[in-house]
Image (cartoon, protein in one colour):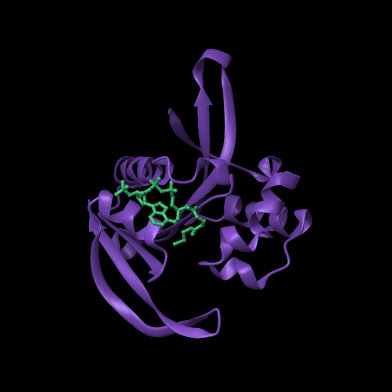
Length: 171
Ligand SMILES: CC(C)(COP(=O)(O)OP(=O)(O)OC[C@H]1O[C@@H](n2cnc3c(N)ncnc32)[C@H](O)[C@@H]1OP(=O)(O)O)[C@@H](O)C(=O)NCCC(=O)NCCS
């Protein structure tokens, strides 16, 4: 499957995107689950990111070449970038559940890593993951991210305190 990352703006915020963020199954390992999302709020969020100097929101697209079609299936955010340290956080989501478990995030993290290195001249990428988000952890590990630490009992997940694992990669 051909996956491409492209910078997006608020014109990409459609009802489907709002539904991703209001679907507990999709956002349960993220802080998004505490919000009731609306098209207005998300457009506003995307606008702010578009205007910011240190955050970059990339759409994850399935490129169906023989139909010249790009299907927007999720997002990966590079940022906030810390220019003093040439480092960044990344965060990501595949909203279209029919694309889960097909290697899309493994490929998207690989592509985002290249963008961090070649476009933003960064040398370190960090990602924090709920300890029970096995798919996310595997996608990082498959990109040679290393587990660097643990924030113990950091968040409440379904009435239980759980850890956040910190992953990082020098690039
Ligand atoms: C978690 C998520 C990012 C994984 O993306 P994905 O494209 O489905 O992952 P991949 O297909 O690249 O899979 C990577 C590895 O994880 C495994 N995996 C994926 N989902 C899994 C799951 N729910 N449970 C166990 N393993 C899983 C895959 O089998 C693969 O491992 P393998 O190659 O050793 O078999 C995606 O499901 C998602 O966006 N979820 C909702 C939002 C979210 O949780 N974002 C991350 C916040 S840190």
